[in-house]
Structures are given as structure tokens and as C-alpha cells.
Length: 403
Picture (cartoon, one colour):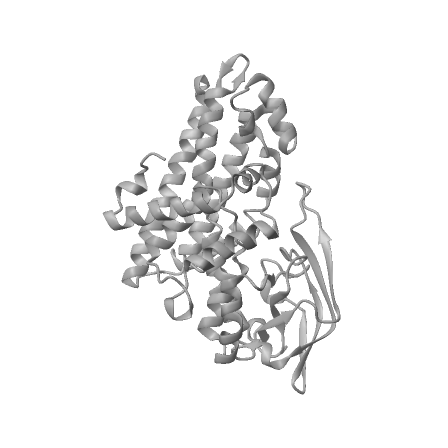
């Protein structure tokens, strides 16, 4: 891979680290797994487990964790470079629920016994977590959640419903926001509870996405008995822990590495594809749109570097994750739109069908059209999940602009 703008800002040690990560991914991610990602497919559970095992054996299972809890102790710039290389090289996306979301909450707020039990299992990939936050009447307005947990002796009895629960069909554990009190402000009555998904009274129902995939679910709780020891931190502090967690989730959604890979894919398609007997490289409107989104992505990458510098100096404003989330997802959606446009009618076929159809007129580039419609359709939700982009702009307006 040729040198990019980020590479020019790195010192020799950082550049060597980036090359080390790139080589590790290329040695440990099978070609078929990489191809599956470019077909617009979600990584399968066996693919994720194999990749997580390889990372654990290398000591890289939790890039953002401090060494005292089993992390590699990487600097923020190393974490960014690792994330970029995973996207650039189509490594399986390890669900962020364990290492990026509940893990930091646990090592920051949990009891010693909870840390000793859960953290090693997260590192090894022994547990598959899902997130029990959103409800039918509590999405962006999460403080209005109604799922209740009533303390009876040494047990919480949980009743209610969660929705849009990603990977719940595979999960054996959930970190869940529950209402333990109705007194005071709505946020003050929310607690953070860990729930085993095989507990009696839990029902998981699939939600099939517009791209035909099954990643989302509804989860129903009927008199589910959860040990009181599964409460993280103090009762009523769940809102505080959730805000801490969501900052990690939103920055993880940025996806700059994957977007950079898609730009390279677009450039190859533009040179290979022909619409009205003319390659897209000769279409000024298309090439201007491609140049615009590439400039936006470069700006996003440099913005992330600036935020890392602010973090190092302790000057964060609390808006960094929101900015990265909303701009990153807008770029992802624009790239998906341009890929669909570049492939033309071939984009509407699924997987290998689009590849075969496109290859008829473009034998050397047929694989580039594969999976475009799946990624486009699923990506329409990117500006909604993790807190809608409208909510992120409100956060930025309040904290950054003071309005």
C-alpha cells in the first residue's frame, strides 16, 4: 500500500507499528473472510471468534485497555492506526459490545469480583455480549426507558422490552439499563445490570433488516431473576455509566479505515466501469463528488488526530465522539451512494450475482460490484444507531457552542 497523508505525520516508531499491524492482519485474516466483507456481509460468529483468538494470542484483544487489565497499553495514536488498518485490510469487525463498551465500564466502575470474572472472559472472547438500551418508546430519548428491575431480597426481578438489540441471537450476556426507581429526575432512577441471556423468562425475536440480514432483535423480559451482585456500581448511577459507554461506541462507529478502502474501490471502479460508453473518470460530476468525499474523509482523519492531541493534553470538551460519529457516518453513506452509482444497475443484484453480472462487461473488475446494495441498504441506519446524528449535533451545539 502506498504512503498516505496520515503516514507522512508519523514518526519512525509509529510508522513501524503501522506496518506491524498491517502484516499481522494480512497473515491472520483469510482471503475468504476479507472477500466476505467486501460482499457487504456481516462477519460470522466463527470468523469473529477466530480473529479474536488471534488477537488474544498476540496480546491485542483489547486495544484501548490499560495493561493492568490485559490491554496492550497502546497510545491513542497506536489505537487509531490499528483501527484504520483493520478497516483498510477488511479484518472482521469484532463487535464493540465487549472490548469497547462494557469492558471499560467494568474496569472503571465494577467491583473487584466482577472485574476478576468478566474481564478475562471478554479478552478471550468467551462471552458474546449484547446491549440492552433502546426500547420501543425510548431510543434517542433513552432516559424515558421503562424496563423495570425490582429488588426482592438478593435478586432483581426484571420485566420489560428492549429493541434493536444487535447480535442478541448469538449473545450469552447482556449489559442492560433498567429502571430501579421512579423518584426524582428520570435519569436518576436508572441502573446498569448484567444479565445472563439463558436466564428463564428471556425471549429473543429476530428483526430482519432491509438488506435481508439478521443482526437486530427484540428482547422481552418476563419475571427474569437476576442476582443483585450483577449490578454494576451504585444503584441509580446507570445513566452516568451509559454516557461513559456511549462515548466509546460513537467513536468506534467512525470507520475511517473502511471508508478509505471504499474510496480505493471507487477509484478502481471509475477507471474500469463504462456508463454510456464512457468511463466514470471522464464524468466530471461523478469525479467531483468522489473528490469531495475523499477530502471530507481526509479532514475527518486529521480531526481525529487533533482530538488525540487534545486528549493527551487533557483539553477535551466532551464533543469529540459526537463529531467523529456524525461525520464518519455521513461519509460512509455518501461512499455507499457513489458505489451504487458507479455500479449502475449491477449494484441491485446481491453478492456474487452482482459480481457475475458486472464481470460480463468488466471482466477484470466484476468483483468490485459485489455486495454494494447490501452495504448501501444496511448503512442507511448508520446515522441513527449509536445515537442519531441529530442528537449528536444537539450535543455539539450545547457543549461546544454553548447554545
